[in-house]
Length: 319
View 1 (cartoon, helix red, strand yellow):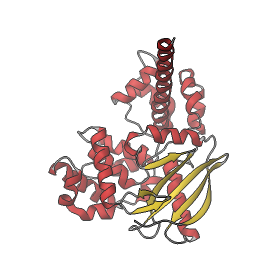
View 2 (view 1 turned 135 degrees about the vertical axis):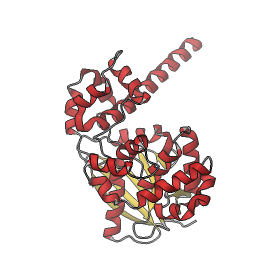
View 3 (view 1 turned 60 degrees about the horizontal axis):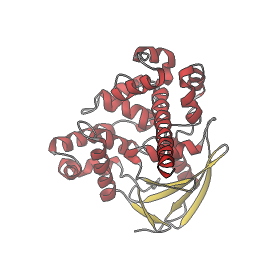
View 4 (view 1 turned 180 degrees about the vertical axis):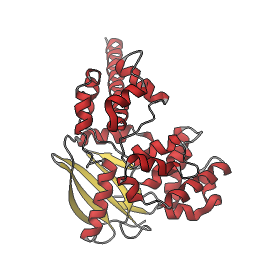
C-alpha cells in the first residue's frame, strides 16, 4: 500500500445556505456509500482517483467552513495547481457545493407541510455518488436485487480493482475508472454480479456510458441528458432517473410514482397526499431536490423520534 504523505490545501466555496453538518449526517445514513468514507470529529476523508493517473489514488479530507469547506488532499507526490483544482471539482460535485437552491427553498418555505423538514435540513446540499462509474455500478447491480446485495458487490469491486492509498494508517480505495471495468469484460465482472445476465447488463451499461461525454451529462439540459441515458442499452427509467439526480446532480426530474416517494409524501402531507403531478406542478425544475430533501429529512426526524422513545422507555425501566 502506498503511503500518501504529501498534502495540498484548498478552499471550496458553497452556495448558501450550506451546512456541512447536514452533509456529514447524510453520508452516515446513505447505506450504499456509508463504508466508502471515514467521518470523524466533524470531518470526512475519502479517496478519489488521482487527477492525471487513474492507477493511483488521492485522499481528500474535508472540513466545514462558514463559506464552504476546506480541503486537504493527501497524495504520493506534490500536486500541480491544475491537479488540485480537478480534485476540488470532484469534491464540489460530490457535495453539490455549487447547487443554487434558492428557487427550491422559496417554494418549500411557502409549503407549510415542509416546515419540519426544513427545520432539520434547510442547509442540506445533496451528497451524491462520488463518480459516475460508482453510481452506474450500484444502480445497475440493484436492478431486481436488494440494496445490501448491490452495496456488498460494489464494495468488493472497489476493493479488488480500485487504487489504494494509506493515510494515518487507514487504507482508502478510490472507485476504479470506467475504462478499467469495461476492460474486465463480462467474465471479469461476473464475480461482482448475481449471475451472468447481471454481469452482461453491467458491462453493457458501462460500455454505453463510456461513449457519452461526462461533462455534458453533468452540465447539459436535463431532458436531453435523460434521453441520452435512456438510449444506453440496459438503462431504463429507474436507472436514468437515479443517475440524473444522485450522480449527475440534475434536480429537474424525479420518479415520484415510486413507493418510497409516495410514502414520503404521505408522511409529510397526510392522506391523501398530493399526487406526483401536483408535486411536479409546485416544485417544477427543483422537484428532485424536494424528493431528496423530503426523504432525508424524514429519515432524520424518524431517527430522532425513535431515539427519544428509547430514552423514555429506558427511563421508565430505570425508575
